[in-house]
Image (cartoon, rainbow, N blue to C red; front, side):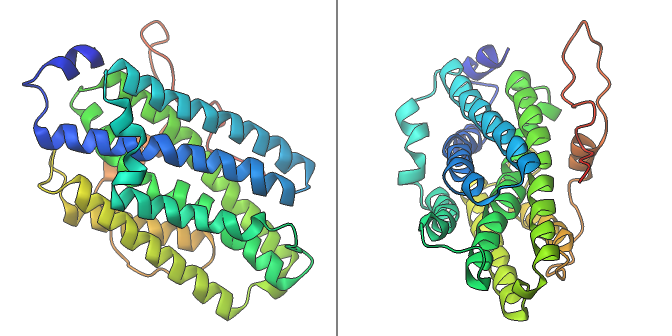
Length: 288
């Protein structure tokens, strides 16, 4: 149905096609960055065996996500060169990817010592950049816009894949935040006022990058979405991430898309013979 709909020149406006391509272009590279960061840095730094088991599972899921976006691009016969090079050619996407990659560079250094306050802070900075910012903020405006098509029964297959990915990413983010809080609980000396102010500034910078990206994706607004709503939503989820890190809210905006809470939080009851359930049996409940 997705292929049939996409080939219909009357079913999507130029602005709608623009936002779909932009999001596929961003996700196809960002998922790779997250997987690389797990393998090249986080796995080496975390030696707790239970966490390592979960990191292996997460790396596998990130590989599936990358393949999913490639599969969607191929199925819709999109220009693969345009989509997969978008991170090089689109400044808003490049800035987001560069933000994430800069945090990996800091702990790729073999001399980083987690026994020191500076080394531990560098590692926490990396975890915040990937789990809180990349997976917890950067992905969510894309989820909103793509799932908005699903609410109108357009691109149903693609939107079901996005639901699977959203399910995984919310679990990844919760794991990452619990990992960060666990490290801080064990090493409270690294949680200085100066460092928390640095993290708040980083998250606020990420919010600015995401709003810039949303403006580029939605120059005229589509599906009842506009840049004002997207700005409020990005600030709202940033506040939720800050609260989970026990840091003060910065924006105090309300959620303009209450239906997203239903997509994320509610259990999906589906007819087994018609479709597949997108919720893991105990997906939202991680026991620490």
